[in-house]
Length: 229
Image 1 (tube, one colour):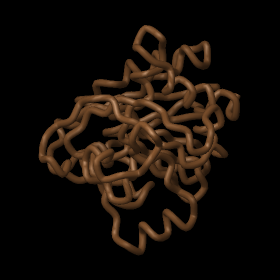
Image 2: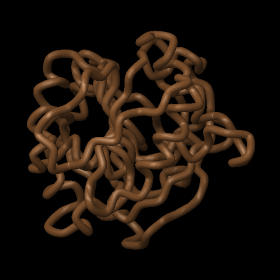
Image 3: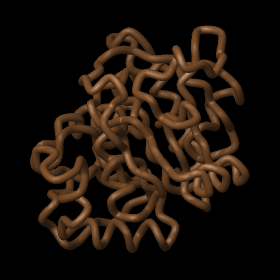
Image 4: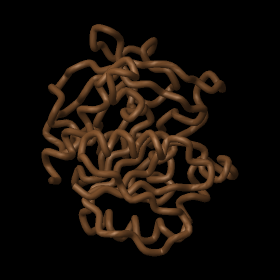
């Protein structure tokens, strides 16, 4: 599986994503600078976490207009899987590849801690190594992670089964108390219409090795290897 990681000014999880991808695939991904206009042949494109362009204007707004994003959007619309993690999720919404927006956390504070997530479906290219309804542990690290969409968009996402993960408690219950940032419907990640584009605020790459105190995130990358090799 050939992967490419897009690197923006301010990215800080690009190397983490590269390490997780190499561990899963056996080969290092291409690291593609935001100013490039050409992408190598890729089975997967990753938009990593961080603070692209210093989060000026809105988180992800400037990165969405980087030269490389024109090719990312073209590839995504042609069916190439694109994974956006944290800031990458924000970029996906700003680029129009996913609906909704990521707003300031309800606490108005930066939050950095592990959270529990419920896997809403396990029939996607990203979740085959999980069980539907399973609770997993991923870290979050964001200040603008509250997912918002209008009622019609939410109804469409729910009706089409496009919610990938929800914040939950240790028992898998979807409660207000388990929601760290105020996201509507406790949404932590969503798919596009075809399930090939996934945006999520939590960081699977930060729990992809025993040395990192957990491997729940590694299963996402292994799921991709199984389906895209």
